Image (cartoon, rainbow over all chains, first blue to last red):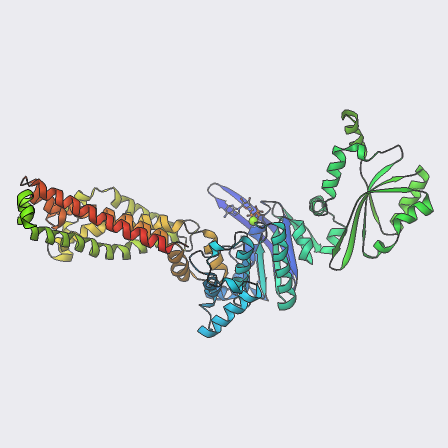
Length: 355
Length: 226
Ligand SMILES: Nc1ncnc2c1ncn2[C@@H]1O[C@H](COP(=O)(O)OP(=O)(O)OP(=O)(O)O)[C@@H](O)[C@H]1O
Ligand SMILES: [Mg+2]
Protein backbone atom coordinates (compact mmCIF):
# COMPACT_ATOMS: atom_id res chain seq x y z
CA UNK A 1 0.00 0.00 0.00
CA UNK A 2 2.73 2.42 1.01
CA UNK A 3 6.38 1.91 0.13
CA UNK A 4 8.98 4.44 1.13
CA UNK A 5 12.48 3.74 -0.16
CA UNK A 6 15.63 5.38 1.09
CA UNK A 7 13.88 8.55 2.15
CA UNK A 8 16.07 11.45 3.14
CA UNK A 9 14.78 14.86 4.22
CA UNK A 10 17.17 17.73 4.79
CA UNK A 11 16.03 21.21 5.81
CA UNK A 12 18.17 24.16 4.83
CA UNK A 13 17.65 26.89 7.37
CA UNK A 14 19.92 29.76 6.50
CA UNK A 15 23.49 28.64 6.88
CA UNK A 16 22.94 25.29 8.59
CA UNK A 17 21.10 22.22 7.43
CA UNK A 18 19.17 19.74 9.52
CA UNK A 19 18.64 16.21 8.32
CA UNK A 20 15.35 15.15 9.86
CA UNK A 21 14.99 11.79 8.09
CA UNK A 22 17.94 9.62 7.07
CA UNK A 23 17.71 6.76 4.66
CA UNK A 24 14.37 5.42 5.82
CA UNK A 25 12.70 2.54 4.03
CA UNK A 26 9.31 1.41 5.11
CA UNK A 27 6.57 -0.83 3.81
CA UNK A 28 2.96 -0.71 4.91
CA UNK A 29 0.55 -3.37 3.65
CA UNK A 30 -3.12 -2.80 2.95
CA UNK A 31 -5.08 -3.23 6.18
CA UNK A 32 -2.11 -2.59 8.43
CA UNK A 33 -2.25 -0.36 11.45
CA UNK A 34 1.35 0.76 11.36
CA UNK A 35 2.82 2.58 14.34
CA UNK A 36 5.85 4.83 14.20
CA UNK A 37 7.22 5.66 17.64
CA UNK A 38 10.09 7.85 18.69
CA UNK A 39 10.95 10.68 21.01
CA UNK A 40 10.36 14.31 20.15
CA UNK A 41 12.50 15.48 17.26
CA UNK A 42 13.11 11.98 15.94
CA UNK A 43 11.64 12.98 12.59
CA UNK A 44 8.31 11.19 12.81
CA UNK A 45 6.15 14.06 11.62
CA UNK A 46 8.51 14.80 8.80
CA UNK A 47 8.42 11.17 7.73
CA UNK A 48 4.65 10.86 7.80
CA UNK A 49 4.29 14.10 5.83
CA UNK A 50 6.43 12.53 3.15
CA UNK A 51 3.74 9.92 2.56
CA UNK A 52 1.30 12.49 1.11
CA UNK A 53 4.12 14.77 -0.05
CA UNK A 54 3.22 17.63 2.24
CA UNK A 55 6.96 17.29 2.65
CA UNK A 56 8.96 16.49 -0.47
CA UNK A 57 11.90 14.24 0.34
CA UNK A 58 15.41 15.37 -0.59
CA UNK A 59 16.07 11.85 -1.82
CA UNK A 60 14.20 8.57 -2.10
CA UNK A 61 10.95 7.38 -3.63
CA UNK A 62 7.37 7.38 -2.40
CA UNK A 63 4.97 4.81 -3.73
CA UNK A 64 1.35 4.81 -2.60
CA UNK A 65 -1.13 2.36 -4.00
CA UNK A 66 1.26 1.41 -6.78
CA UNK A 67 1.80 5.01 -7.91
CA UNK A 68 5.03 6.94 -7.76
CA UNK A 69 3.81 10.13 -6.11
CA UNK A 70 6.95 12.09 -6.92
CA UNK A 71 6.25 11.68 -10.62
CA UNK A 72 2.74 13.16 -10.46
CA UNK A 73 1.72 16.54 -11.81
CA UNK A 74 0.34 18.96 -9.18
CA UNK A 75 -3.23 18.24 -10.19
CA UNK A 76 -2.76 14.47 -10.10
CA UNK A 77 -1.03 14.78 -6.75
CA UNK A 78 -4.02 16.68 -5.37
CA UNK A 79 -6.40 13.97 -6.45
CA UNK A 80 -4.05 11.32 -5.02
CA UNK A 81 -4.11 13.20 -1.70
CA UNK A 82 -7.87 12.87 -1.57
CA UNK A 83 -7.32 9.16 -1.16
CA UNK A 84 -4.93 9.71 1.76
CA UNK A 85 -6.70 11.14 4.79
CA UNK A 86 -4.74 12.85 7.54
CA UNK A 87 -5.49 13.86 11.12
CA UNK A 88 -3.38 15.97 13.42
CA UNK A 89 -2.48 16.52 17.05
CA UNK A 90 -4.25 19.86 17.19
CA UNK A 91 -7.18 18.75 14.99
CA UNK A 92 -6.81 21.69 12.59
CA UNK A 93 -10.50 22.22 12.09
CA UNK A 94 -11.69 25.39 10.41
CA UNK A 95 -12.97 27.60 13.20
CA UNK A 96 -15.15 29.72 10.96
CA UNK A 97 -17.13 26.73 9.73
CA UNK A 98 -19.67 24.59 11.51
CA UNK A 99 -19.00 20.91 12.07
CA UNK A 100 -21.20 20.15 9.08
CA UNK A 101 -19.29 22.55 6.85
CA UNK A 102 -15.94 21.24 8.05
CA UNK A 103 -16.85 17.75 6.93
CA UNK A 104 -18.39 19.14 3.75
CA UNK A 105 -15.22 21.09 2.90
CA UNK A 106 -13.40 18.28 1.06
CA UNK A 107 -16.62 17.25 -0.70
CA UNK A 108 -17.17 20.60 -2.39
CA UNK A 109 -14.61 19.80 -5.04
CA UNK A 110 -16.01 16.30 -5.58
CA UNK A 111 -18.48 15.37 -8.27
CA UNK A 112 -21.26 14.61 -5.80
CA UNK A 113 -24.57 16.44 -6.05
CA UNK A 114 -25.78 18.59 -3.20
CA UNK A 115 -28.13 15.97 -1.82
CA UNK A 116 -25.48 13.25 -2.10
CA UNK A 117 -23.05 15.47 -0.24
CA UNK A 118 -25.61 16.13 2.45
CA UNK A 119 -26.19 12.43 2.89
CA UNK A 120 -22.47 11.75 2.98
CA UNK A 121 -21.76 14.40 5.63
CA UNK A 122 -24.54 13.11 7.87
CA UNK A 123 -23.43 9.54 7.38
CA UNK A 124 -19.82 10.41 8.29
CA UNK A 125 -20.86 12.31 11.40
CA UNK A 126 -23.04 9.37 12.36
CA UNK A 127 -20.04 7.07 11.92
CA UNK A 128 -17.95 9.07 14.38
CA UNK A 129 -20.89 9.50 16.75
CA UNK A 130 -21.50 13.23 16.40
CA UNK A 131 -24.83 13.45 14.61
CA UNK A 132 -26.14 15.87 17.20
CA UNK A 133 -23.42 18.48 16.68
CA UNK A 134 -24.08 19.35 13.05
CA UNK A 135 -24.46 23.07 13.59
CA UNK A 136 -21.97 23.57 16.39
CA UNK A 137 -18.66 25.34 15.81
CA UNK A 138 -15.34 23.69 16.65
CA UNK A 139 -14.84 26.02 19.62
CA UNK A 140 -17.91 24.45 21.21
CA UNK A 141 -16.49 20.91 21.16
CA UNK A 142 -14.18 18.98 23.46
CA UNK A 143 -10.82 17.74 22.19
CA UNK A 144 -12.08 14.23 21.63
CA UNK A 145 -15.10 15.49 19.70
CA UNK A 146 -12.89 17.73 17.58
CA UNK A 147 -10.73 14.76 16.67
CA UNK A 148 -13.85 12.83 15.70
CA UNK A 149 -14.85 15.64 13.37
CA UNK A 150 -11.34 15.64 11.95
CA UNK A 151 -11.63 11.90 11.34
CA UNK A 152 -15.00 12.34 9.61
CA UNK A 153 -13.50 15.07 7.44
CA UNK A 154 -10.48 12.95 6.60
CA UNK A 155 -12.76 10.12 5.50
CA UNK A 156 -14.96 12.29 3.29
CA UNK A 157 -13.39 11.24 0.01
CA UNK A 158 -13.30 7.56 0.95
CA UNK A 159 -9.54 7.30 1.38
CA UNK A 160 -7.75 3.98 1.55
CA UNK A 161 -5.16 5.34 3.93
CA UNK A 162 -5.39 7.41 7.08
CA UNK A 163 -2.29 9.16 8.44
CA UNK A 164 -2.41 10.13 12.11
CA UNK A 165 0.21 12.51 13.44
CA UNK A 166 0.06 12.39 17.24
CA UNK A 167 -3.71 12.23 16.90
CA UNK A 168 -4.24 11.42 20.56
CA UNK A 169 -1.39 13.35 22.17
CA UNK A 170 -3.61 16.26 23.16
CA UNK A 171 -6.25 14.00 24.72
CA UNK A 172 -6.69 12.46 28.14
CA UNK A 173 -6.22 8.68 28.52
CA UNK A 174 -9.90 7.83 28.41
CA UNK A 175 -10.59 9.94 25.33
CA UNK A 176 -7.44 8.55 23.75
CA UNK A 177 -8.83 5.06 24.16
CA UNK A 178 -12.16 6.01 22.61
CA UNK A 179 -10.44 7.56 19.59
CA UNK A 180 -8.24 4.48 19.25
CA UNK A 181 -11.33 2.30 19.42
CA UNK A 182 -12.86 4.33 16.62
CA UNK A 183 -9.74 3.96 14.50
CA UNK A 184 -9.70 0.25 15.16
CA UNK A 185 -13.32 0.03 14.06
CA UNK A 186 -12.55 1.94 10.86
CA UNK A 187 -9.63 -0.37 10.18
CA UNK A 188 -11.82 -3.44 10.62
CA UNK A 189 -15.01 -2.28 8.94
CA UNK A 190 -13.67 -0.16 6.10
CA UNK A 191 -10.38 -1.95 5.68
CA UNK A 192 -8.69 1.39 6.19
CA UNK A 193 -4.90 1.27 6.25
CA UNK A 194 -3.69 3.41 9.14
CA UNK A 195 -0.30 4.93 9.90
CA UNK A 196 0.00 6.20 13.44
CA UNK A 197 2.72 8.50 14.68
CA UNK A 198 3.09 8.64 18.41
CA UNK A 199 5.54 8.93 21.26
CA UNK A 200 3.51 6.58 23.39
CA UNK A 201 4.05 2.86 23.10
CA UNK A 202 0.71 2.54 24.89
CA UNK A 203 -1.02 3.71 21.71
CA UNK A 204 0.91 1.27 19.56
CA UNK A 205 0.10 -1.54 21.95
CA UNK A 206 -3.56 -0.70 21.75
CA UNK A 207 -4.12 -0.92 18.01
CA UNK A 208 -1.03 -1.48 15.85
CA UNK A 209 -0.08 -4.71 14.21
CA UNK A 210 3.29 -3.40 13.06
CA UNK A 211 5.64 -0.87 14.51
CA UNK A 212 8.77 1.06 13.58
CA UNK A 213 10.95 2.80 16.14
CA UNK A 214 12.64 6.02 15.09
CA UNK A 215 15.65 7.75 16.55
CA UNK A 216 17.51 10.74 15.13
CA UNK A 217 15.93 10.40 11.70
CA UNK A 218 16.50 6.67 11.35
CA UNK A 219 14.32 3.65 11.85
CA UNK A 220 16.25 1.60 14.36
CA UNK A 221 13.88 -1.32 14.52
CA UNK A 222 10.72 -2.41 12.77
CA UNK A 223 8.55 -5.48 12.62
CA UNK A 224 5.29 -7.01 13.71
CA UNK A 225 4.22 -5.92 17.12
CA UNK A 226 4.36 -9.29 18.86
CA UNK A 227 7.99 -9.92 17.98
CA UNK A 228 8.99 -6.35 18.74
CA UNK A 229 7.31 -6.47 22.14
CA UNK A 230 8.59 -9.89 23.03
CA UNK A 231 12.12 -9.62 21.68
CA UNK A 232 13.12 -5.99 21.28
CA UNK A 233 16.64 -5.73 19.89
CA UNK A 234 17.35 -2.03 20.20
CA UNK A 235 17.85 -0.27 23.56
CA UNK A 236 15.48 2.50 22.57
CA UNK A 237 12.78 0.01 21.68
CA UNK A 238 13.28 -1.67 25.03
CA UNK A 239 12.99 1.71 26.70
CA UNK A 240 9.67 2.38 25.04
CA UNK A 241 8.32 -1.06 25.83
CA UNK A 242 9.46 -0.98 29.44
CA UNK A 243 7.71 2.33 29.88
CA UNK A 244 4.53 1.02 28.28
CA UNK A 245 4.52 -2.14 30.39
CA UNK A 246 5.43 -0.22 33.57
CA UNK A 247 8.57 -2.28 34.08
CA UNK A 248 10.71 0.85 34.22
CA UNK A 249 8.51 2.51 36.77
CA UNK A 250 8.59 -0.62 38.94
CA UNK A 251 12.36 -0.91 38.77
CA UNK A 252 12.68 2.73 39.67
CA UNK A 253 10.52 2.19 42.71
CA UNK A 254 12.62 -0.80 43.71
CA UNK A 255 15.78 1.26 43.37
CA UNK A 256 14.30 3.92 45.62
CA UNK A 257 13.08 1.43 48.19
CA UNK A 258 15.57 -1.46 48.09
CA UNK A 259 14.34 -2.70 51.44
CA UNK A 260 11.21 -3.94 49.65
CA UNK A 261 13.29 -6.54 47.88
CA UNK A 262 15.13 -8.07 50.88
CA UNK A 263 17.83 -9.55 48.72
CA UNK A 264 19.96 -12.15 50.45
CA UNK A 265 23.14 -13.79 49.22
CA UNK A 266 22.44 -16.04 46.26
CA UNK A 267 19.15 -14.28 45.62
CA UNK A 268 18.63 -13.21 42.02
CA UNK A 269 16.55 -10.29 40.91
CA UNK A 270 15.29 -11.10 37.40
CA UNK A 271 13.01 -9.91 34.72
CA UNK A 272 11.17 -12.85 33.18
CA UNK A 273 9.40 -12.52 29.85
CA UNK A 274 7.41 -15.01 27.86
CA UNK A 275 5.20 -15.05 24.80
CA UNK A 276 2.10 -16.93 23.83
CA UNK A 277 1.95 -20.59 24.77
CA UNK A 278 4.60 -20.52 27.46
CA UNK A 279 2.16 -18.46 29.46
CA UNK A 280 -0.08 -21.38 30.14
CA UNK A 281 2.75 -23.49 31.43
CA UNK A 282 2.91 -23.34 35.18
CA UNK A 283 6.50 -22.24 35.04
CA UNK A 284 6.67 -20.67 38.42
CA UNK A 285 5.33 -23.61 40.36
CA UNK A 286 7.61 -25.88 38.41
CA UNK A 287 10.61 -23.89 39.66
CA UNK A 288 9.67 -24.60 43.25
CA UNK A 289 8.60 -28.18 42.78
CA UNK A 290 11.44 -29.38 40.57
CA UNK A 291 14.33 -27.12 41.42
CA UNK A 292 13.57 -26.04 44.98
CA UNK A 293 13.84 -22.44 43.85
CA UNK A 294 11.53 -20.08 45.65
CA UNK A 295 9.99 -17.37 43.49
CA UNK A 296 8.87 -14.10 44.94
CA UNK A 297 6.87 -12.14 42.37
CA UNK A 298 7.34 -8.38 42.77
CA UNK A 299 5.57 -7.35 39.61
CA UNK A 300 3.63 -9.06 36.87
CA UNK A 301 2.09 -7.77 33.70
CA UNK A 302 0.41 -9.62 30.86
CA UNK A 303 -0.38 -7.87 27.61
CA UNK A 304 -2.57 -9.37 24.92
CA UNK A 305 -1.20 -8.12 21.62
CA UNK A 306 -2.94 -9.28 18.46
CA UNK A 307 -4.43 -12.17 20.44
CA UNK A 308 -0.99 -13.16 21.68
CA UNK A 309 -0.31 -12.93 25.40
CA UNK A 310 3.03 -11.45 26.39
CA UNK A 311 4.05 -11.68 30.03
CA UNK A 312 6.58 -9.68 31.95
CA UNK A 313 7.49 -10.40 35.56
CA UNK A 314 9.98 -9.05 38.01
CA UNK A 315 10.85 -11.77 40.50
CA UNK A 316 13.35 -12.67 43.15
CA UNK A 317 14.62 -16.24 42.77
CA UNK A 318 16.12 -17.80 45.89
CA UNK A 319 17.85 -21.12 46.18
CA UNK A 320 21.28 -22.69 46.22
CA UNK A 321 23.63 -21.69 43.40
CA UNK A 322 23.37 -25.12 41.83
CA UNK A 323 19.59 -25.15 41.93
CA UNK A 324 19.44 -21.65 40.51
CA UNK A 325 21.64 -22.60 37.60
CA UNK A 326 19.47 -25.58 36.76
CA UNK A 327 16.33 -23.52 37.09
CA UNK A 328 17.70 -20.98 34.62
CA UNK A 329 18.50 -23.73 32.13
CA UNK A 330 14.98 -25.03 32.53
CA UNK A 331 13.50 -21.59 31.85
CA UNK A 332 15.67 -21.24 28.77
CA UNK A 333 14.42 -24.57 27.46
CA UNK A 334 10.84 -23.46 28.08
CA UNK A 335 11.48 -20.42 25.84
CA UNK A 336 11.22 -18.01 28.71
CA UNK A 337 13.58 -15.04 28.61
CA UNK A 338 15.40 -14.30 31.85
CA UNK A 339 17.29 -11.08 32.31
CA UNK A 340 19.21 -10.70 35.55
CA UNK A 341 18.93 -7.25 37.00
CA UNK A 342 22.13 -5.99 38.56
CA UNK A 343 21.20 -6.19 42.21
CA UNK A 344 24.32 -4.36 43.32
CA UNK A 345 22.59 -1.26 42.10
CA UNK A 346 19.99 -1.82 44.74
CA UNK A 347 22.41 -2.77 47.50
CA UNK A 348 24.57 0.29 46.97
CA UNK A 349 21.58 2.44 47.71
CA UNK A 350 20.77 0.33 50.72
CA UNK A 351 23.99 1.39 52.43
CA UNK A 352 23.28 5.08 52.26
CA UNK A 353 19.60 4.88 52.94
CA UNK A 354 18.12 4.91 56.43
CA UNK A 355 16.14 1.76 56.87
CA UNK B 1 -34.27 76.08 15.67
CA UNK B 2 -32.89 78.33 12.96
CA UNK B 3 -32.95 81.18 15.45
CA UNK B 4 -30.74 79.24 17.82
CA UNK B 5 -28.25 78.56 15.06
CA UNK B 6 -28.24 82.07 13.65
CA UNK B 7 -27.57 83.40 17.13
CA UNK B 8 -24.79 81.13 18.35
CA UNK B 9 -23.34 79.57 15.17
CA UNK B 10 -24.00 82.17 12.48
CA UNK B 11 -21.60 80.72 9.94
CA UNK B 12 -22.93 77.25 10.25
CA UNK B 13 -26.38 78.34 9.27
CA UNK B 14 -25.07 80.34 6.33
CA UNK B 15 -22.84 77.54 5.13
CA UNK B 16 -25.23 74.69 5.89
CA UNK B 17 -25.31 73.63 2.27
CA UNK B 18 -21.50 73.60 2.05
CA UNK B 19 -21.37 71.48 5.14
CA UNK B 20 -23.75 68.93 3.66
CA UNK B 21 -21.85 68.86 0.37
CA UNK B 22 -18.51 68.50 2.15
CA UNK B 23 -19.80 65.61 4.21
CA UNK B 24 -21.06 63.96 1.05
CA UNK B 25 -17.69 64.53 -0.63
CA UNK B 26 -15.79 62.97 2.24
CA UNK B 27 -18.07 59.96 2.27
CA UNK B 28 -17.77 59.67 -1.49
CA UNK B 29 -13.96 59.71 -1.37
CA UNK B 30 -13.89 57.17 1.45
CA UNK B 31 -16.33 54.82 -0.26
CA UNK B 32 -14.74 54.94 -3.72
CA UNK B 33 -11.18 54.72 -2.39
CA UNK B 34 -12.15 51.85 -0.09
CA UNK B 35 -13.67 49.91 -2.96
CA UNK B 36 -10.46 50.11 -4.98
CA UNK B 37 -8.31 49.51 -1.94
CA UNK B 38 -10.19 46.42 -0.85
CA UNK B 39 -9.53 44.95 -4.26
CA UNK B 40 -5.83 45.83 -4.51
CA UNK B 41 -5.07 45.58 -0.81
CA UNK B 42 -6.47 42.10 -0.38
CA UNK B 43 -4.85 41.00 -3.61
CA UNK B 44 -1.44 42.25 -2.49
CA UNK B 45 -1.89 40.95 1.05
CA UNK B 46 -2.75 37.51 -0.27
CA UNK B 47 0.22 37.55 -2.66
CA UNK B 48 2.50 38.53 0.23
CA UNK B 49 1.28 35.68 2.43
CA UNK B 50 1.29 33.13 -0.37
CA UNK B 51 4.80 33.94 -1.59
CA UNK B 52 6.33 34.35 1.87
CA UNK B 53 8.72 31.70 3.22
CA UNK B 54 6.73 28.53 3.82
CA UNK B 55 3.76 29.98 1.95
CA UNK B 56 1.60 27.99 -0.43
CA UNK B 57 3.26 29.60 -3.47
CA UNK B 58 6.61 30.44 -1.94
CA UNK B 59 8.54 32.78 -4.22
CA UNK B 60 11.44 34.76 -2.81
CA UNK B 61 11.71 37.18 -5.72
CA UNK B 62 8.06 38.18 -5.89
CA UNK B 63 7.89 38.51 -2.14
CA UNK B 64 10.94 40.68 -1.68
CA UNK B 65 10.18 42.97 -4.63
CA UNK B 66 6.61 43.46 -3.48
CA UNK B 67 7.63 44.02 0.09
CA UNK B 68 10.20 46.66 -0.89
CA UNK B 69 7.70 48.56 -3.04
CA UNK B 70 5.17 48.53 -0.24
CA UNK B 71 7.69 49.74 2.30
CA UNK B 72 8.81 52.48 -0.07
CA UNK B 73 5.31 53.83 -0.56
CA UNK B 74 4.54 53.58 3.11
CA UNK B 75 7.48 55.79 3.96
CA UNK B 76 6.45 58.67 1.69
CA UNK B 77 4.44 61.23 3.68
CA UNK B 78 0.97 61.48 2.18
CA UNK B 79 1.05 65.19 1.53
CA UNK B 80 4.16 64.71 -0.58
CA UNK B 81 2.73 61.62 -2.27
CA UNK B 82 -0.17 63.73 -3.50
CA UNK B 83 2.24 66.05 -5.28
CA UNK B 84 4.43 63.24 -6.60
CA UNK B 85 1.57 61.36 -8.26
CA UNK B 86 0.01 64.41 -9.94
CA UNK B 87 1.11 63.32 -13.45
CA UNK B 88 -0.51 59.95 -12.90
CA UNK B 89 -3.61 61.59 -11.47
CA UNK B 90 -3.91 63.76 -14.58
CA UNK B 91 -3.42 60.76 -16.79
CA UNK B 92 -6.19 58.82 -15.12
CA UNK B 93 -8.76 61.49 -14.27
CA UNK B 94 -7.81 64.29 -16.68
CA UNK B 95 -7.51 66.78 -13.83
CA UNK B 96 -5.52 67.26 -10.67
CA UNK B 97 -8.16 68.88 -8.49
CA UNK B 98 -11.48 67.77 -7.14
CA UNK B 99 -12.58 64.70 -5.33
CA UNK B 100 -12.14 62.31 -8.24
CA UNK B 101 -8.58 63.47 -8.67
CA UNK B 102 -7.98 62.93 -4.96
CA UNK B 103 -8.93 59.29 -5.27
CA UNK B 104 -5.73 58.43 -7.16
CA UNK B 105 -3.29 59.51 -4.41
CA UNK B 106 -5.68 58.21 -1.77
CA UNK B 107 -5.65 54.73 -3.27
CA UNK B 108 -1.89 54.79 -3.69
CA UNK B 109 -1.47 56.07 -0.17
CA UNK B 110 -3.77 53.60 1.55
CA UNK B 111 -3.23 50.36 -0.40
CA UNK B 112 0.28 49.64 0.93
CA UNK B 113 -0.94 50.20 4.48
CA UNK B 114 -3.98 48.02 3.92
CA UNK B 115 -1.98 45.28 2.20
CA UNK B 116 0.27 45.06 5.26
CA UNK B 117 -2.73 44.92 7.54
CA UNK B 118 -4.23 42.14 5.45
CA UNK B 119 -0.94 40.27 5.47
CA UNK B 120 -0.84 40.47 9.26
CA UNK B 121 -4.42 39.26 9.45
CA UNK B 122 -3.80 36.29 7.14
CA UNK B 123 -0.57 35.29 8.86
CA UNK B 124 -2.72 34.67 11.91
CA UNK B 125 -4.53 31.84 10.12
CA UNK B 126 -3.28 28.64 11.73
CA UNK B 127 -0.73 27.00 9.39
CA UNK B 128 -2.10 23.68 10.61
CA UNK B 129 -5.44 24.46 8.97
CA UNK B 130 -3.70 25.30 5.71
CA UNK B 131 -1.81 22.03 5.98
CA UNK B 132 -5.03 20.14 6.63
CA UNK B 133 -6.53 21.70 3.50
CA UNK B 134 -3.48 20.67 1.50
CA UNK B 135 -3.75 17.15 2.84
CA UNK B 136 -7.34 17.09 1.59
CA UNK B 137 -6.17 17.89 -1.91
CA UNK B 138 -6.93 21.62 -2.02
CA UNK B 139 -4.88 23.64 -4.50
CA UNK B 140 -3.48 27.16 -3.93
CA UNK B 141 -6.51 29.03 -5.31
CA UNK B 142 -8.90 26.95 -3.27
CA UNK B 143 -6.79 27.50 -0.16
CA UNK B 144 -6.75 31.27 -0.71
CA UNK B 145 -10.50 31.57 -1.12
CA UNK B 146 -11.75 28.81 1.11
CA UNK B 147 -9.19 28.88 3.88
CA UNK B 148 -7.24 32.15 4.11
CA UNK B 149 -10.02 34.56 3.24
CA UNK B 150 -12.59 32.63 5.26
CA UNK B 151 -10.56 31.78 8.34
CA UNK B 152 -8.94 35.22 8.26
CA UNK B 153 -12.24 37.06 7.89
CA UNK B 154 -12.32 38.47 11.41
CA UNK B 155 -8.80 39.82 10.96
CA UNK B 156 -9.69 41.20 7.54
CA UNK B 157 -12.70 43.05 8.94
CA UNK B 158 -10.61 44.49 11.74
CA UNK B 159 -7.91 45.55 9.29
CA UNK B 160 -10.51 47.14 7.05
CA UNK B 161 -12.04 49.15 9.83
CA UNK B 162 -8.61 50.43 10.96
CA UNK B 163 -7.79 51.26 7.35
CA UNK B 164 -10.99 53.16 6.68
CA UNK B 165 -10.47 55.23 9.79
CA UNK B 166 -6.98 56.02 8.55
CA UNK B 167 -8.42 56.81 5.16
CA UNK B 168 -10.80 59.37 6.63
CA UNK B 169 -7.70 61.10 7.97
CA UNK B 170 -6.06 61.07 4.56
CA UNK B 171 -9.10 62.55 2.81
CA UNK B 172 -8.82 65.62 5.00
CA UNK B 173 -5.22 66.04 3.90
CA UNK B 174 -6.30 65.70 0.29
CA UNK B 175 -8.12 68.93 0.97
CA UNK B 176 -4.74 70.54 0.28
CA UNK B 177 -5.19 69.91 -3.44
CA UNK B 178 -8.73 71.09 -3.42
CA UNK B 179 -10.31 67.71 -3.13
CA UNK B 180 -13.27 69.12 -1.28
CA UNK B 181 -14.68 67.30 1.71
CA UNK B 182 -14.68 68.12 5.40
CA UNK B 183 -10.91 68.69 5.47
CA UNK B 184 -11.16 71.42 2.86
CA UNK B 185 -14.11 72.89 4.65
CA UNK B 186 -12.30 73.09 7.97
CA UNK B 187 -9.21 74.71 6.44
CA UNK B 188 -10.68 76.95 3.77
CA UNK B 189 -13.91 78.10 5.33
CA UNK B 190 -13.08 77.56 8.99
CA UNK B 191 -9.42 78.20 9.73
CA UNK B 192 -8.55 80.61 6.94
CA UNK B 193 -11.61 82.78 7.53
CA UNK B 194 -11.53 82.68 11.32
CA UNK B 195 -14.91 80.95 11.45
CA UNK B 196 -14.03 78.58 14.25
CA UNK B 197 -17.56 77.21 14.53
CA UNK B 198 -17.10 75.76 11.03
CA UNK B 199 -13.84 74.10 12.06
CA UNK B 200 -15.58 72.69 15.09
CA UNK B 201 -18.50 71.30 13.16
CA UNK B 202 -16.17 69.73 10.55
CA UNK B 203 -14.25 68.08 13.36
CA UNK B 204 -17.40 66.75 14.95
CA UNK B 205 -18.66 65.37 11.66
CA UNK B 206 -15.33 63.62 11.04
CA UNK B 207 -15.44 62.15 14.52
CA UNK B 208 -18.95 60.90 13.89
CA UNK B 209 -17.81 59.24 10.67
CA UNK B 210 -14.94 57.58 12.54
CA UNK B 211 -17.21 56.34 15.30
CA UNK B 212 -19.72 54.98 12.84
CA UNK B 213 -16.98 53.07 11.00
CA UNK B 214 -15.64 51.77 14.28
CA UNK B 215 -19.10 50.65 15.34
CA UNK B 216 -19.81 48.88 12.05
CA UNK B 217 -16.37 47.27 12.16
CA UNK B 218 -16.87 46.01 15.71
CA UNK B 219 -20.31 44.69 14.85
CA UNK B 220 -19.05 42.62 11.94
CA UNK B 221 -15.95 41.51 13.84
CA UNK B 222 -18.15 40.13 16.54
CA UNK B 223 -20.49 38.54 14.05
CA UNK B 224 -17.66 36.75 12.26
CA UNK B 225 -16.13 35.27 15.43
CA UNK B 226 -17.18 31.76 16.36
N1 LIG C 1 10.31 23.00 8.36
C1 LIG C 1 11.42 22.70 9.03
N2 LIG C 1 12.52 23.45 8.91
C2 LIG C 1 13.64 23.14 9.59
N3 LIG C 1 13.77 22.11 10.42
C3 LIG C 1 12.71 21.31 10.61
C4 LIG C 1 11.47 21.58 9.93
N4 LIG C 1 10.58 20.62 10.30
C5 LIG C 1 11.22 19.82 11.16
N5 LIG C 1 12.51 20.22 11.35
C6 LIG C 1 13.50 19.56 12.20
O1 LIG C 1 13.50 18.19 11.90
C7 LIG C 1 13.64 17.41 13.07
C8 LIG C 1 12.52 16.41 13.16
O2 LIG C 1 11.29 17.08 13.34
P1 LIG C 1 9.91 16.33 13.40
O3 LIG C 1 8.86 17.38 13.57
O4 LIG C 1 9.78 15.43 12.25
O5 LIG C 1 10.04 15.49 14.73
P2 LIG C 1 8.97 14.61 15.49
O6 LIG C 1 9.55 13.28 15.67
O7 LIG C 1 7.65 14.72 14.81
O8 LIG C 1 8.88 15.34 16.89
P3 LIG C 1 7.62 15.63 17.82
O9 LIG C 1 7.32 14.38 18.56
O10 LIG C 1 8.11 16.72 18.72
O11 LIG C 1 6.50 16.09 16.94
C9 LIG C 1 13.70 18.39 14.22
O12 LIG C 1 15.04 18.55 14.59
C10 LIG C 1 13.14 19.65 13.67
O13 LIG C 1 13.76 20.76 14.26
MG1 LIG D 1 5.72 15.59 15.34
